[in-house]
Length: 74
Image 1: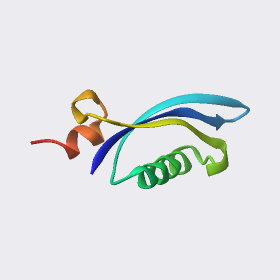
Image 2: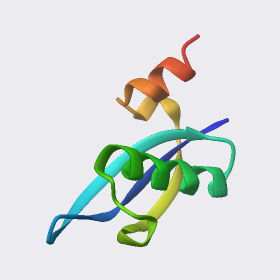
Image 3: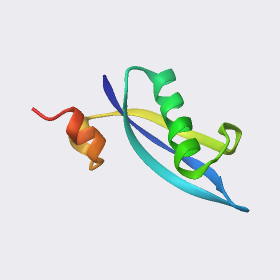
């Protein structure tokens, strides 16, 4: 598993809301699926309204997201 940082926008009502999200996934395709699933479940946003502008692998120590910290805890 790797840590990823995604940046982009998603539709929130009539406006586009920017986001930065750190997640744990096995590969790029899994990371994209988890991002779409996250916004769909939390904000009821369809996948077509979630724009992923960048998706990069990061060092887990750079992240402050609880899910990343918990996964890579030693």
